[in-house]
Length: 462
Image (cartoon, rainbow, N blue to C red):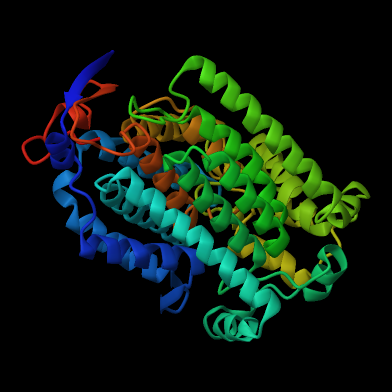
C-alpha cells in the first residue's frame, strides 16, 4: 500500500540532510578505490581487495551506524548465513575450509562496505549524486582521450605496473591493434573492460538521477564518445541500461522520469530505438572486426567470458545440485574448469589464473557457489534486500545489476557489490523530487518512507 505525503522544502531537507565534506571525501575515496581496485596483501595469501574503497566503506559504515536498520541487515545476514551453509555442505568441506572461510569473509566485507556507501549516498540530494557520476563519466572520457593521444598513457602504465601483480595486467596490445585499430586505454586499471564497466555504470546512474530534458540525448552521445575512445564490447550494455532507466521509479516532481504512462511509452520506444541504432553502428564500425572473430568461433576471450561460465555452472549444478561447489569452492570443481578451458587456445597459466581469480560472470558464479537450493535461497535474500533498499519497483535495478553481473567475476569481491548498492541508492533517490522548491510537493511513497518522517527521530529513512 502506498501513502501520499506532503513535504515542504524544510521537511525534505530534514529528511535528506545532504552531503558533508567528510562524507563527500570518503565517497570520492571509495569510488577511486573501487575503480582502480588495488589489492593490498595484509599477510601472505590474505588479500584486501580494493583497499582504499574498503577503508572508506568501513568509515562510512561507522559514520552512518545510527541509520542501520534491522530490515536491511536481516537479508544481508541471511546471505552470509547461506554462504556458511554452502561451506558446510559443499564437497571437500574440510580440505578447502581455509579458502572457503576467506571467501565468506570477503563476501561479508564487500556487503558491509557497500552498505556503508549506500547509507551515505541516500542522504545526499538527488542532483548532487547525479552531478558526481556525471563528473566521473567525464573524467574517464578525458583520461582515455589523454591516454590515447598523448604521452599520458606512460603514467597510467607505470601506475599499473607498480600496483598490480603481473598476472592481473592486460598485455594483449597486439590483439587490440588487430581487432580495434588501436591499443585500448587502461587508465589506471588492470584492463580496458574495467574502464568500460565503470564508465557505462557511472553514466547510467547520472541518466537515472538527472533532471535534464536532454538526458537521453546526452547519454547516448556519451556512449558514442566512449565507444570511440574505449572500444570495449562492454559499452554495448549501455543500450540495455539506457532502456532500463525508463523503468526507474519516478517522483511526482517536475521532469520525473516516466511520470505519465503515455510519456513512459514514448520514452521507452525512443530509448529502444536509439539503443538499437547505437548497437547497429557499434557492431558495424568500431566493433565490426571483433564481431567477425566472435562469429567465426575463434575468439578465445568471448568463449572464456560468455560461454565457459555457462558450461561450468551447468556441470557444477548437475554434480552438486543442492549447495553447488560451495562459496569459494573453485578447487572442488577443478576438473570441470580444466575440462572447459583446456580446449580453448590459451596459455596454461591463463587457465590457472581463471581458476584462482574467478570465472568471469558473477551471475553464473552465484549458481556455481550455491547450487539450486542454496542459490534460490540466496536469490530470495537478495530480492528482499533490493526491496528494502530501493523502495520501489525492481525492474530498473534488476536489469542493471543483471547486466553488469555478466561483465565481471569475483562474486565475493567489492566491485560487484558496490555496483549493487549504488544502483539501489540511485533507485531510492530517483523517487525524490529532482529539484526541491519552496512549494509543497506531493511525494508518493511506501508507508514509512522518508518523506513521511523525520530521520533524527525515526530511522525509517529509506
